[in-house]
Every structure is written in structure tokens, then in C-alpha cells.
Image (cartoon, rainbow, N blue to C red; front, side):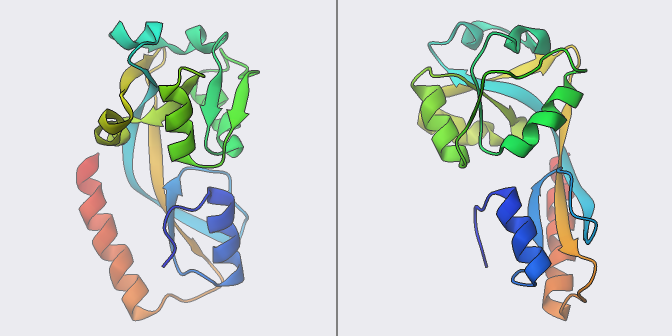
Length: 171
């Protein structure tokens, strides 16, 4: 069992056969990796309670053009640009490798993090808030990944069924 790995690492583990399944946000994958939707969650901006966005009801994507955007995974940038209708070029991106590092930097007002609403319960401990992104509102898909070249063990197959059933309730 591997917990909290960057998506590139999850994909590598699946391709090598070191893991049966991976769970993560929608990403462009190697052709041998297949995915299925687990759930979707609206995207928002995570920022310090002291950031100007913190008091807003919502933030349009276009207003991110002058913000430092902190990402835990740089491969998310093209998907975020697509989600934003290509209104933002994300020129001021900081790739930090881990979500908790991104949260710590946002807490220090070093930038904002684009994150799915399902993470909002974690934010309180970092003194952060999540403000919905709009124009357009976007859903982030969370996927179950596996390698098409390998047959899942009965235990992994059962786990995939259970997690799919459990997480589908988060939609």
C-alpha cells in the first residue's frame, strides 16, 4: 500500500506492476493506464484567511492571471488551463510536489492553490479557506487507475468495487 504519492509516481508504480490500483485526479496517462471515474468535486481557490480572495463569495478564473498559483503537481497545469477556458496562462506556477507543502505556502500568503471542494475539511487546520472558482465553474474528476496489462487479484478487484461504491456518494 502506498499513500500520498504524486501522480507521476502512481503511474510509474502501476506501469511497473508495483501497485494494482491508484487513486488520483484526472490526468493524461500512458496508454497502458486505464481509468474510471470515482467522483467529481467543484474546484476552488485555497488561500490564507488574510488573502484578498478570502472574503469573496467566488473568484472568476480570469482573476488568477496575476496570482502565484501553487501546484502539488505541475502536470495539472494544462488541465487547469482547459478548465479555465484558456483564460489564464498560469505563468506564475510554483510546483512543490506535495499538497501539504502547497497548503503551508498558501498559509504564508505565498500564493493560492487550486483545489477540489472535498479538501475543505483539511483547510481549517492550516488556517485556510476555499473560495469557489467561477466563469466557468469546474468539476475535478477523481479517478481510479489501473494497468490494462495486468489482471487484478480478487482482493484488488473487490477493493476497487468497494471504493467506487463508497466514493460515488461524494458526487
